[in-house]
Image (tube, rainbow, N blue to C red):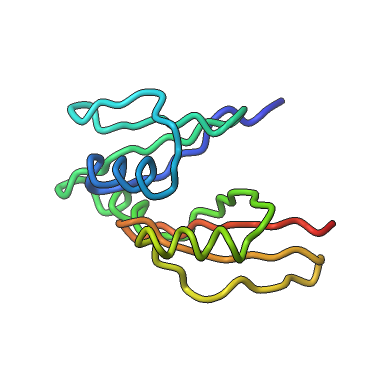
Amino acid sequence: MRLGAARVFVRDIVKAKEFYEGQLGLAVEGFSSESGYCAFDTGPTKLILESIASDAPTDDQALVGRFTGLSFPIDDIKGAQERLVSLGVKFSGLPEKQYWGGWLSTFNDPDGNGLQLVQYAG
């Protein structure tokens, strides 16, 4: 089995598209503001943004603005973070060395969804 897609839920699909494309530099594969989705080519696993309406049920609303557990592998985490900060990306702190030898740094999209840069050991 292979993972084909990861979904992140947002409130404003246009604003989210601008962030993921313009600031993170991801290539748009499909977009429909009317349908409330945006797909990005991120390699074998696609990143799919889906909008949640402001009048959606509480359970759906809870999907927006949380830690996603998604990580973008980077060779130079400090340099990548500096570049992204210069583009307006908000990080929760500096990259932190992990017990397993790699580095992590957490940032948020415009809706408060937490994502990470990861630099693997070695």
